[in-house]
Image (cartoon, rainbow, N blue to C red; front, side, top):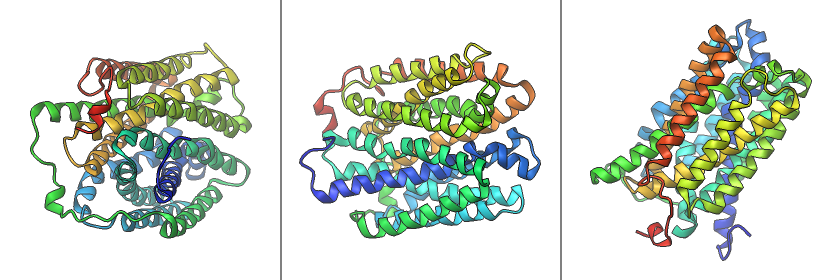
Length: 398
């Protein structure tokens, strides 16, 4: 078992948070799987359609930390329900949008909901388990993001191909409604007696703050590198000879492979952060590198995307647990900072990737993503205060 000797309520809570991250991830990146269909509906280029991802990420980047601080005194479970309701509204507006501008407005609503929910879940999970299990709990909860990649993104792609992208978003709306009801009944409440002023970051040493900022920066760099290319993974695979009818299956396989990354991260995230970051960063680098030019084609290129996604998915628990471990601020504010940095990377990556793709194609975009990923690897590996080579058990309880 992943978690032993936990109270039943804690186990149920972790599974509930897992379901929340699944819905959150699927809602956030659903446009990736239906990008081509959306572009055709609104008669725009694929690079422009990527702004649906950018709009969502913009609100998370701007809102994650302020919203987390301002809502510190509110019951955590109530905030979860408010956030999930935001996903319901967002997905419904997107599904019904008559213009691309209104679609982006719906995505802005979803971004605000995401800013709250994804900032809460890591700290919520950390409070359900002993300190020595924090990294594993976060890895498990964020496993919902990989399930979103396995079922959600390719699922929306399949529905978009067989029916329409609007039907796919209506289905996402229904899933968000069902999850909201389930969370209301099954998620254990975690009250907060903290006032807004108490939730503001406290004064810490320069070393502690520097360590925290390095973790946040590394997170942003990796997310930027990933989303430069992954936002446009469907046209990328088509360029490598994959048929349009096989796209949903390809995304399903790459998402399934990303589970391996999270599983492996759960084994070493609380012991060897530096080695984990190096190995996962290299997996990203090699996977993306194999997609340059026409080194691989067809299903071999899908394998390269799978390797890249294994590395990317495994990085998330390392940066999230590293931010909390730095103890520069409260766990939920640390989670919000990582959430904001991640979405800054998504915002800049999807927007810059769209511009580069439109004007330079993948012959320019792929090398650019490789350079950014390499920068992330180097910063992480040589920042031993942020990602220690060996993490002793005592460091969890300091």
